[in-house]
Length: 242
Image 1 (cartoon, one colour):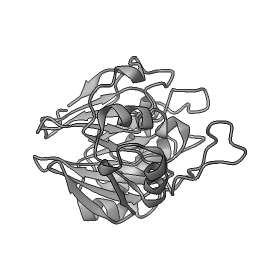
Image 2 (cartoon, helix red, strand yellow; image 1 turned 120 degrees about the vertical axis):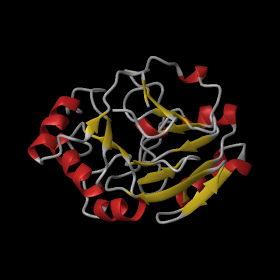
Image 3 (cartoon, helix red, strand yellow; image 1 turned 30 degrees about the vertical axis):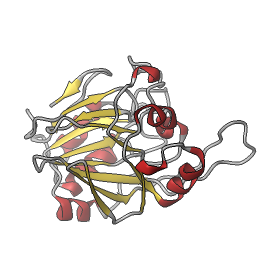
Image 4 (cartoon, rainbow, N blue to C red; image 1 turned 60 degrees about the horizontal axis):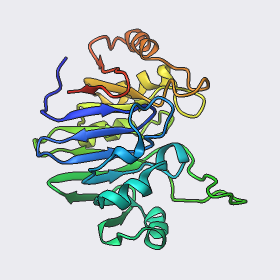
C-alpha cells in the first residue's frame, strides 16, 4: 500500500532512517550508519538538513556528531543533549534545545518532541560512568504536504500512545519490534492499536541476536488484534518505502 505522501523513507538498519521530504529536504533519524546491517558507510553521508536523535545510547547517537560536523543540519534535541553539544560541537548555530511537548517549525517542517519509555546513558571514550544526554524521546513530524508520522525511538508500549494518536493523527508509525531492549512485536501491535495508524515501519530488530523480533511476528500480532488492514512496511537495509 502506497503512503499518502511523495516523501521517501530509507532504512539503513537498526533505527537509522533517511527521509527525503516532498520539499527536497533530507532528514536523518538516529544515524548509526556504522551498524552491522547498514550498506552505507557513515563517511559517505554528505547531506543532512534536519537531524533528530532520540537518545544518547551509542546505537542511536552513533555517528550523529561526525555527520553533523560535515553537514551542519538544524538539530533539535532534548535540553541536556543540547547543553552537551553546546560544548562539544562546533556548529552551535544549528542547535535547538527543547523538551517533551514542545514543537518547532524548521525548514517547512513541524517537529514535536514526545516521551519514550527507555533509558539514555552510555559509556564513551573510556569514561568510568555513563554520559547522560537527556531522557529518551520520540518525535512526530509533519511534512510540507501535511503528512504526519511518529518516530517512537527506543521504547516500550505506553498508554499515552493513545493520546499521541488523538492529538496528532499520524498515518505512519516507526516502531521498534526487536524485544529485550525495547517492545517486542506483540507490544508493537498494541502500540499500533493505541496510535490508530494505518501504516507501520518496524525497526530496531535483526541487528543482533538479542533483538530477535520480526516483521512476520508483527503481522501475526496485528492479525490477532483484528488489525490485518494495517500495512507493515518491512524492507531490507538500503531500500526505501514510499
